[in-house]
Image (cartoon, rainbow, N blue to C red; front, side, top):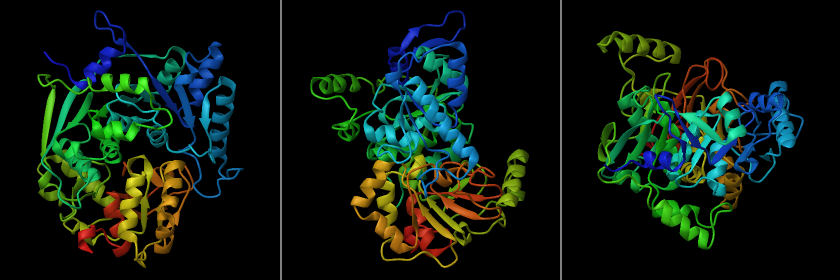
Length: 467
């Protein structure tokens, strides 16, 4: 029987096969770190008198707590300043390469690595952050881990795990104009639910996926975790290879040729069997927007907010009612009638150069709606910021009335100064719309950069086609 891509990567990294129901021991190629989940791991090493096993396979950055304006020290927030300074001290002590604020390579942990060519097909990649699944866009087996596991990888360069199940997500046909990767993944999560992928690696397949750029594929894999999956993967192909070639950490010369030979063996065998399969028709998809308080509560932009009384399942009916109450919406109101206060374009989901280009193309020649408090545009990495400024995108955003910021997690989560206030409503290109995710009492609608940009023009949720 043939093997899936995830099974191939797992086998290639198997150090020891578990016996009698024990987990396997697998080798980890790359560990990414940031300031939030690393302090306890470093302290564990320190208390045990251990060094890092392969320090050249670890790299850290500052992202979650970083301000996106006034990045010169000192950092105003005391908790953020402590987390940042602790990471810097730990990296100095243990010899870990760090990309700090102001460094040209600094950025969100899941954004800087692909740009530098650190993320490559067939690798195992971990980080103390759930959205490590982003790197699966390259055909890597990448997933988030807990703090004790972060320490284990630092000490041994291995992890003890049971093999994951596999699920194929096949997106047939071609997407309509105006429909993109964010709409696809929101549609997938709405279809299978936030727990539908639990315990599985999701492999995205089909013509619509193959036509996507690497930036778009990273958006898809990034939000796999929102469907409950351990990881998301897309088979490497010529699009992958073209993206990687020439990047700072990509193989070169004869090593590049050897890498290509291996990478081309990774796609799933034709006779491989998945544990589950889900099929979507690309030509049936339209722009999606979330209305509730989890990423699975999403609908096509032309739909209405659900009416809880019409939902048969008691648990789903109660969840819908609670979400509508928190979001301050009226059951049955058109999603297009929802007015927002803030627009956020950025995050490890949609803060890459392609996302910024798409938003700028829509905003150019317009000005933000009068009802908006603010529009934040935050590149996912410093290299993306530099490229955007070379292309003049920053001037388009500023002429529009948006705030152009430095790289960081920003308003994706309430761990830095970029936060919503209670009752404030945002449309956001990030990945989570949980209660309080963007700030205590904040209300978040997830959407694509195109929908967010169009909404910034009109002031109510809309797509570019509605303009």
